[in-house]
Length: 132
Image (cartoon, rainbow, N blue to C red; front, side, top):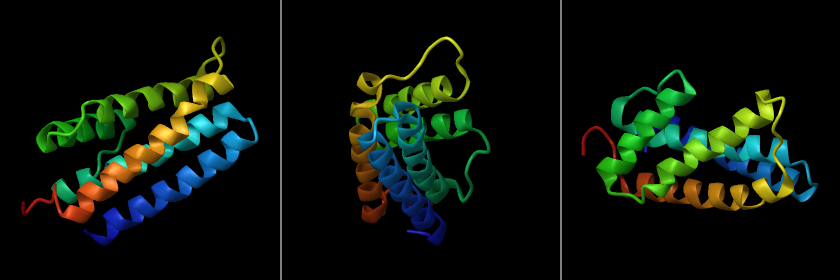
């Protein structure tokens, strides 16, 4: 695993810890944002391993990561979760009419933890690098 991929996973773990802590004090919008960022940073790691670069946009990361999911034969829910978490982040950041409730966010940090763990396992096995 490249040093950049390791750093992305370290960042994902830090974001995950933030999401858990913030969820525990019932600030759902910020918890959802941090959980999304955890998966976003983790998703960038296998994309970087394959191409030596990461997309510059959130949608680019989602698209490139979706291809990793397909190519690796992973559960399609992994890619869908990244999109759902992004939707929650967007609501938290920009939506004036909708809010993220505690019920909405409750499963997100746990699912983000599973996603980060799955991505880490993939990279530790060595799958997805340009040479494989």
